[in-house]
Length: 222
Image 1 (cartoon, helix red, strand yellow):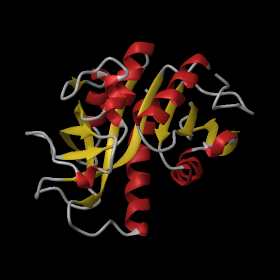
Image 2 (cartoon, one colour):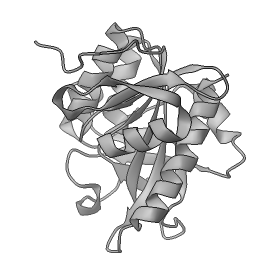
Image 3 (tube, one colour):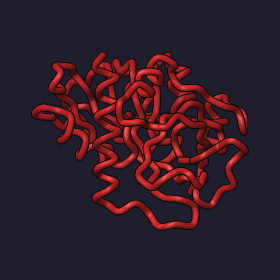
């Protein structure tokens, strides 16, 4: 199978993963000093550079959905990436969740076939790396830890399992793939919409993306 990623610059061992190429560019400009585009193949924009703390960091887009994210992570692992944090968006189901709130994934429930293809049974929970997750929980921003679900269709059209406060389309398959690759992985998700309600406005979403990205870069710098 031909590679999805064709790096034009060296990659770091630590990476922030995002679905949206535009978010990759936003975080590269926010987090890296003189970022260099490290991938543009298939529209999966990636950037590498040094953080203000002096650490090398890659920011790579993965495309939409679990299968794409799992494929990209597999190639990143082959290129030497060993720790990743997903910075993504989710649909909130619990009333207490506010638009723009940031959720640290405590566990991710597999709600679709893409996770099953990676050895995770439907409704099975996949845990992120404990150390990375504990570091995220210590961030001063007051992020909320919670259980999420990952579906292969739009989360807003799904019925979440009991105890699930939010859902996305990538986290469970991504964590499952990281487990097989022995890559440390964690995830933070921005509540960009709530079931039956309006989406978060673009400016507010970008502010939340920067907050989540700074937290992810911070824990990867230690």
